[in-house]
Amino acid sequence: MSNTDFALAVEDLTVSFDGFKAIDALTLYIDKNELRVIIGPNGAGKTTLLDLICGKTKASGGSIKFKNEELTKLPEHTRVRRGIGRKFQTPSIYENLTVFQNLEVSFPKGRSVLGALFFKCNDEVKARVQVVAEEVGLADALPMEAGLLSHGQKQWLEIGMLLMQDPKLLLLDEPVAGMTDEETERTAELFLTLEGSHSLVVVEHDMKFIGELTEGKASKKVTVLHEGSVLAEGTLAEVQDNEKVVEVYLGR
Image 1: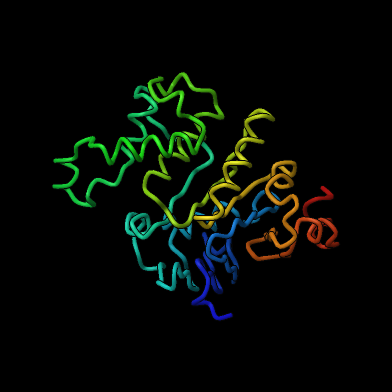
Image 2: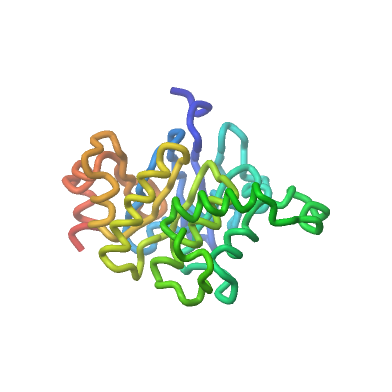
């Protein structure tokens, strides 16, 4: 399979900060509509990798191709328009607006200044808000002020705000941190639903959550990063049995 067949092809990616290689000749391939989990100890380069893919950080070398288009020279906002959505560790929502309004303002507004100026909440927008709210389990909370939501619901709202833009690749950094067990289970269900129509890259520490994402899916890959490079890749069972992984991560 050539790298043109993948949704995301990262090859020999490197970034240095003051001489320290945070990402070191990293190569990673994500299929269309694949859910890939990335694990690794603190400082392994997981969040930096997401920063490089979305354009928050510029690469020192290597290639990032999304749907066979080179991204490394493109600014962050252009990558969003190409269909890359990034969720950070802390929810970034408008606490004083309702859930409906948070989703509404996330709708792509014609991709231009004029489009934004003359944006109206028409039937198309309302229908999209309803669909996304149901998808993330917030349909009953649409009139509620976002600041009153639980921590888990705020995380789902931010994921919904990304889905309003219909991204083809979702980058999710520790999405279940601070969630209850029930919220974590519902988030796993949500991601498995999204998997059929989006590629997802999930950076996570919670092994129970990773188990829920990969359970019964023999082909689902987990990638282990260590010191800015791929240490191991395979099913969850395979990486858990890998001696190098146990040594640097799971056995700590």
